[in-house]
Amino acid sequence: MQNNCSIKISVHLTMIIMLITIVMICRYRLENRIGYIIFPIEAIFLIICLYWDSTHIANYHILNGVCIKYYLLFAFYRILSSIVVTESVYNSTKQIVYFEIAPFFLAVFLFKIFPVVDILKIIRNTGIINSILGVYELVSHSSLFLDFISVDSRRLITGGFGTNDARVRTVFIHPIICGVFTTVIWILLIYFPFKRKWVNYCCRLATIICLIGTQSRSSWVAFFIVFLLNIFRNIHFRTLDIKKLKNLLLILFLTGLLILLFYDRFRTFYILITERWISGLDSNNKSNFNRVMMLRMGINDFIRNDIFHKIFGGGKEYAIKLLKNNSILGWNIAVDNSYLSVLLDYGLLGLFIFVSQILYFCNKYFSKNPICQACSLSLIAIFSSGFFYDIHGWFIVDFLISIFICGISFTEDNEQNRSFKIKKRF
Image 1: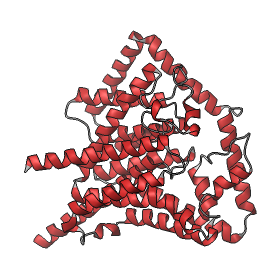
Image 2: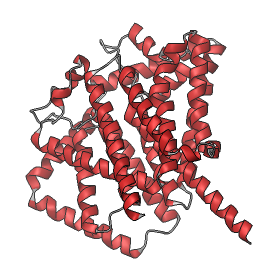
Image 3: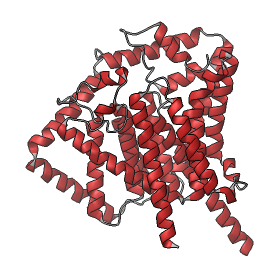
Image 4: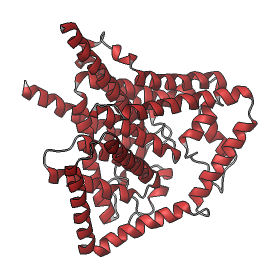
């Protein structure tokens, strides 16, 4: 029985790594026709899951979970709103189906087949491998996956390789996505640590180095939010005991010792971080100027719109079309603000649903179940980084959102079933 379970987990691990890696490499090589690659992979994966879980197809009351309802409501509202406003069914649905709805149902099937903890640990292990690759990139200033990039727009942002300006991205298209993924792995390491402490410390060190190497300020902000929330929760529930304080002091002491021993190397890290923060606070910085101007232009456009468009928005890709028609210093590729994109594309109603689900995640973080805490905190990290880039449309981000939402819902469902059985017994 144990051997069969190990085989299933190994197969599952292989399938997840293949799915993510294939899709990421395809994103490197394809731009506009990505759906032709992603959708067949999803279809094959779905058929395998259906065959595997054919005996439980009828038992999917899990879809009644509050967290899942928010997710599906937001997805289908965006599709319906875009169809009504733009009168284009295909353009309004394709990306949401490829990147959000299909991965969501894949996640549902995965959680029906395997325990929640096993899936989260598999993602953790995959992320550790990614962090080790990130450490290699940071030290060597080179990428193992650079030769796979054939899309011109992706080549433009790889010019730093071979210099100290190289940003870690591993299999991901952009350093921001690599940074967000690494932040999530840090959270999973907190809640699902390895049995040996030295392994945990090494893995956490690798994730921190990889996160620094991405030079992604948005990921750093998300990491600090996660770090502060974790401390606040420990203080609030009085789980920050003397033993944890001793371990924290020991880590700080060892870190200080390493800094003294390898001062030149740590000074490089310090300069890298401070320069990124300084440029992030510089009003003359081009990326900062673009983001601020896009925010100003978007809000002004929203104010000028009629009541209908204020409530329901201008339809999918309205925000990016606004930018393309009014480029900022030649920049017209990305809005770089999920909240602004939702407001312009789907109106106040869309933004209300979007923010409501985030508040729900925050509420679930203070539950007593560690799985719900880990999944909620991971979702908070992802959505807090959304102030600096568009969350939806990046496959791995949407895939992780689906995984963590299903993780919360399946955990809640299992708890309800367990409490129902106990009541029934007595």
